[in-house]
Length: 154
Image 1 (cartoon, helix red, strand yellow):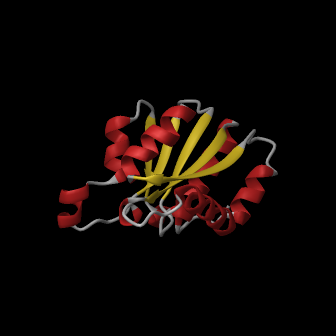
Image 2: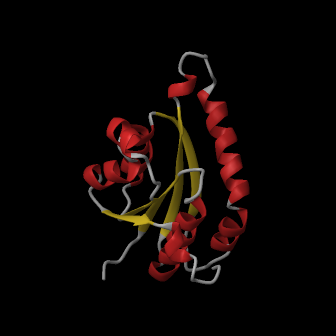
Image 3: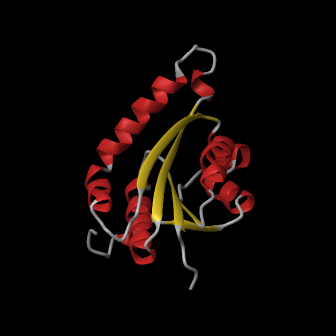
């Protein structure tokens, strides 16, 4: 089995976020790996409004830190996990995720969640998981939240 030293966990801010966090931290613990949680706020709806993207990103980071506080606190107290960080950026989701967060971090593993897009929406925008599989040079794990329902909370 592959040994992972740096794990990037892509958070969607929605239904798969907790499952991705749980899986990332479990793998990080088992591999004694560091973890970077990353989230991209889609900038497209805000581009014409003159929004302060730095402030929007910081608000997003604080929200994610709050939503995942139990997991982050546990991970930061786990001696097997050398580092845990959360970064949020604003931009076009798939491009910014890869170029601003994943490539600079240079992970051995990227973990993301699956979200059920309708066929029409998928045809127009694609999916982040498909973009990651096609464009990153490391392993990609796509987590289905329902696969964790039978397991006790970590």
